Length: 124
Image (cartoon, rainbow, N blue to C red):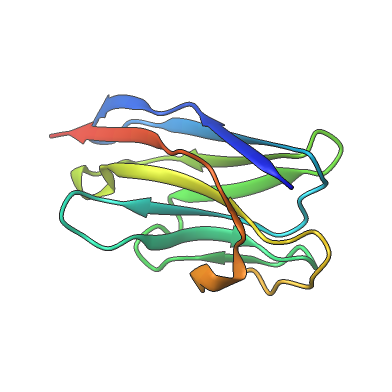
């Protein structure tokens, strides 16, 4: 069992920055991702790190967001820069089973464990 706790959300103005963190406990989490869900929209993948360390980004955040993982601390960070109002959403941390290989994409069925989410609000 893996427990995920997100932190770091908040309210910023357009162009601002935030850093989201996700602490995984229980088992080492090798394949993790950030998803987000805006009001009235479906949840979408934002950034992911696969079991082999490869990263994937949604086109809408490339060049602005950076995902990083600390395997010693079992934490996953997401640096959000140049934020836009369209980035407003509830951001979720997700982790795949530590016993299976995971490619690190945005297929939600790959991720067995989910956090409760942290809110990011960007005002214009």
